[in-house]
Image 1 (tube, rainbow, N blue to C red):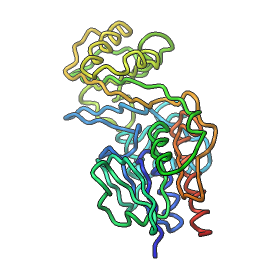
Image 2 (cartoon, one colour):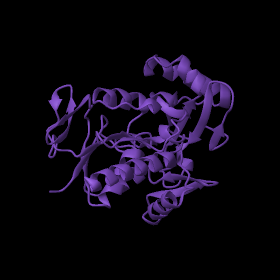
Image 3 (tube, rainbow, N blue to C red):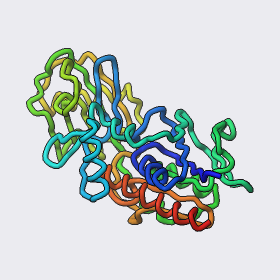
Image 4 (tube, rainbow, N blue to C red):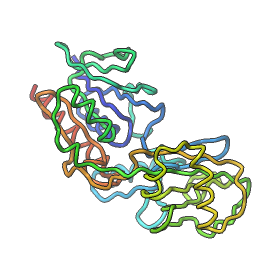
Length: 316
């Protein structure tokens, strides 16, 4: 009988784990509260406007990730942007889609509980067990979500991972601005070390993006984002728009304005372990929060957890 594993989270860590297990003949079902793939490797589409409103780019330093990025580039799913920074093409979520190869994905699914029965693990939402093949017979569960979300699920399932407590995140409010014509932004990329805004980018400056309308992404600093963490997007948008105008001198009025909160955006202090794994329970966790605030760190952590799970399942 085919061994099946449940992966909670379809960000880069979860997709890397699924890819690694697939290569070793282990089937995976992925669950995510979102209907998209890639986690913070995200692209928001509004009519003809496209916003990379999460991760802005990624690097490739390790041999395995560099080889994967080379494949994405060959297939038209990634391209260099500046220096040694890469982006997905035509959007940041393109590499995430490329990492799937036949796995079952259950989107729009907020997992609230894990149960281990005589046949294996089952995954449940507030409405009860998820109706998907192999549920109730998963040989292992991999939690590929932010540490504050993984920790209560793991604890309720009987796992004790003290390293969860080490991971510290900074939030990020992102502002998306759409203009019918050029807004007069002086630079394609602006990084700021002081004030309310940390990053500004013209989406069209990235390779593979449609240049017909001006889409600008503005990301607030961690301090500003923490101060306004519990505000509504409707309240945050005009505040950040004012900060954008003051920082850049852009006076043009955008035709589209929206704000998005990333509660767990930037890893400030990692757990300091490649992954967390309990071989007796066959339950573990992974993510960029294990290693570093980089997309590549999420990939490495996902592969590390998958390797640990494969070793346990192979011996069992």
